[in-house]
Image (cartoon, rainbow, N blue to C red):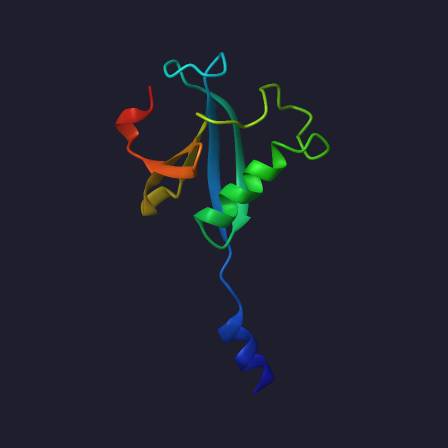
Length: 105
């Protein structure tokens, strides 16, 4: 009975293919380029975005092959779920907002 209950309460973790897009200069609104790509294991988009934001804004956690700046306002995260679709999130002053593909320039 204990094992059955554990299986019901365990959250499903998914591998998300995530890409960080930044402009060459902070504050630009055009010219986004892919700066880093990684795979994150999380339960949903919000937790995956939180993990990426923390990883790339704490200097001790940043990967050694990452050469871009910290994630800041205006940067875009792209989540590719294969057959389940693609989603873009842009960091705005109020937090991460889902955007349409056509806004990625």
